[in-house]
Length: 571
Ligand code: G16
Image 1 (cartoon, rainbow, N blue to C red):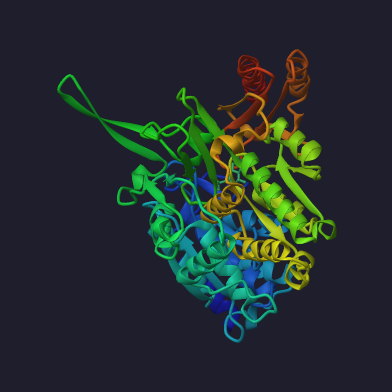
Image 2 (image 1 turned 180 degrees about the vertical axis):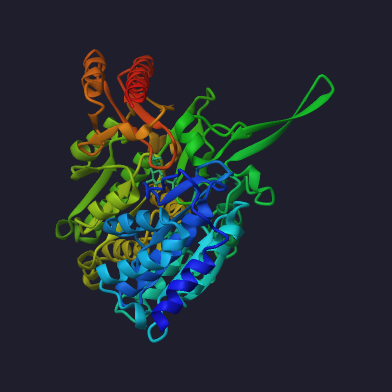
């Protein structure tokens, strides 16, 4: 019987990927993420089964699997599932993924069978008559090929029809998934190939830039990740500076040494001895440490940006005359983008027909939220950390701009917005130009997911339209000084956050201590939450002065440490 054949193939093919003893896996903020050699191959094998089931449940739609650990160190890796429209796996399914990831090899067949029953997927016809479809890719980590092998092993057991895209950025894989599933729909997303991805973005960029000029060049730190080679490829499609295009200097684009991911190596020569010094780089480093990568030799007011390890986040920055560092993070990109889009809509004469809103998380600087609400007069929603939450909330607007402060975000245009943009009859050349710019933005922006390369071009277009320098952009509002701290505790899971992660529900008493310190601080705001991608608790604090922000962050970190230790000693 087909069913038995499938069940035993699932058990057999899993043999090289046993469930490690005593480990418990959990589908977190961005899928599963951990040290690659501690049983991640077992998890990836299980994720192949989830993807096959998900495809089946969605009438054989193409499902994506991305192998990446993004900003995490090179020895980590991870895996996440991409739903048919290129968004994150439906939350309800995270539970099935967690269940399968914690399943012993010998039980894979039985658990699979049970899930097919629970999810009303027919296991007999599953594999031969109508095949599940999965596409997958990986970043540049050394553990990637082995994990892909584990993935293929479960897909083969289930006779899934699959495409291996090799090495891609995470957003490119999301793009491919959406292209596959919208191919024959009224709104095809594009061509499901690397060239298709670059061409779509480059053509939209040229249209959006019509009549505008970019001032100076942009230096892009690619965190020695997959963004480096992909940016080089994208540049082949973009007009260069001598053709009214963009002048990009790519740095930290070494993917030959996978261990260099999110790190940069510098040669220091002192006292006739040369020494290799290793520093961090990339978007996470720049945002967390609020400084440029140490190798940066940017001159004052030079536009710089950093991507993360899988190129789904971006932050901008520059130094001023006094060599002081200024960060233009996800909050800044959100305000720039929302302002630009709202302006274009107004100029096009469709401003009052569109509901534009911004979605942030608790990490958003209080000054940015106030600026959006009071100056830009746009509504702001706050969600828990994780793209899936922001993406979902952004869908409530005609044009929803969502960004995490760490640089992860995009803009969503719903069908109503696209119809209005495409069908509005312009009454003047100015209106026509604004409508064309908006239309181009719907293609320039990767609406499947936050995409550093697409967000970079969006930022460049928005700055060029305003003829703004990074300093002009910075001048729109003044950030409240803030500080991020990472606290390692025996078990981060005892910290349970509520109210869009702005308050701790447990351990009991911890929030009252945090409130105590916040109330003593001028314009103080702080929160603590367990990270979904690292084994740590994150603390954020802001205040009217840098000293107070730092003090508050340290006080909250001490509360976290104390309650973390207390919980551990009780258990
Ligand atoms: C992932 C998620 C982001 C999140 C970040 C940090 O990003 O996709 O939504 O902000 O992790 O999450 P946490 O604070 O829970 O560790 P990335 O770029 O690492 O995939």
